[in-house]
Length: 98
Image (tube, rainbow, N blue to C red; front, side, top):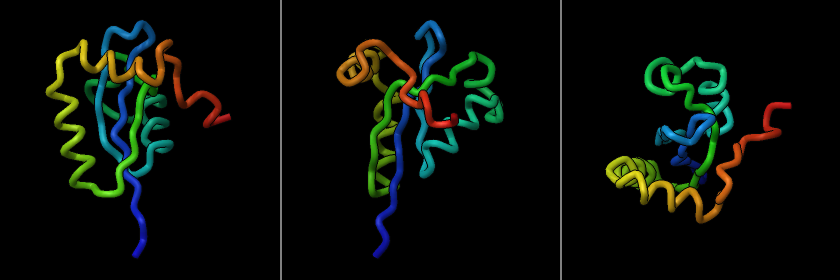
């Protein structure tokens, strides 16, 4: 049986005033799509392309449930989650595409 990887991720804009939560099975490609503005809609409109948080799941149902859970959280809770592992809100994808 093949292990699958799914990622729940949070992107932010340059000033960290806007966040976006998504789910994907290919985090590097998906973040690159956001950075290249290939994803039409919210992230393109608000220039949200800085990866500030992600977590890995082996089950797509759990990943989607977690994405929905995080989307329903208050903004302060999302900020706390990000700051547990990334207190300076650095772009975790730095160096991926060099």
